[in-house]
Amino acid sequence: MHPIIDIHCHTAGIGSGNSGCFISPELRKSWKYRAYLNSFGVQEHELLHHGDKLVLERLSASLTASGKVDMAVVLAMDGALNNQGELDQSCTEMYIPNEFLAEAVKQHPNLRFGASINPYRRDALELLDKAVAAGAVLMKWLPSIQHIDLADKRLVPFYQRMQQHGLPLLTHTGDEASFTYARNELGDPHRLRLALEQGVTVIAAHAAANGSNEGEHNFSRFLRLCDLHKNLHADISALTQINRPGQLRRLIQQHHLHGRLHYGTDMPLTNTPLVSPLGHLTRLAPWTVARLMTIKNPWDRDLELKRALGVPEEVFTNPARLLRI
Image (cartoon, rainbow, N blue to C red; front, side, top):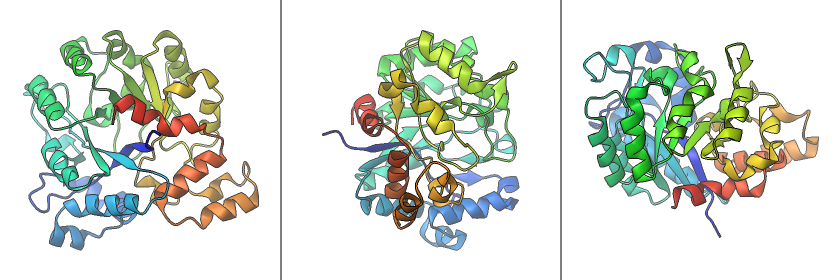
């Protein structure tokens, strides 16, 4: 029996406890900052007192209390770089370093390390090798925030090294609205072709379910690419948000892709009003919605909501087969 693994779980940090994390002044002034901390179940004064590892402790405890989900891949977040290939804090809104996260998840058997390395770093290949040695189970990119052009041929050596390690790439596709600014053209699924051609297993986060490029919906561009590349996968994280109506249904109607779809939550968004069974009253019976609303654990509620919406059972266990955990 394969465990159920959430392939898409976030953490946060403000640099407390010498974590090396930071959040930009612009984002900390935004209402989103307070909303994100609340959704993690922490307050700023707690982080200042206990350190940024507290977020991971709360995540692990919530996951331990789940009766449905066994593990979660927690994602680091590299930043944007300057012309010297070094971190540019002035252009980076959130930074979660690999070193901090790789060490912190060792304290929690139900958490796994998802690395994030901007491939334009001067020592990117060395950092990739170190991340794999530290236990990374995948690589996570958010191109529109990290300013990564996946179609840039300068990335070929990085892709080839990922392929050699057998490390999947989980990369955001479609538009991004969680930050104060995004270059959404970098979320075009067509930019995935170069990595796919190098043999990298690519997981399109959110299945390019929103936005458009060149006058065509990103989801249509994603589906066409799936027909050409069997190493293109997707996760179903964030697809139950009330601002993404019908997107999960459209994805699971693609029956030939069920073996390439992966369970993910985009935690902590499952702890916000964006993801509520009440947003699905037009598709679910009132008594089903009422039952789902009584489920307190966020992972259990998320999984049962997706089951009720018709997600096939294999999608929940696909991450364990892909990541070989």
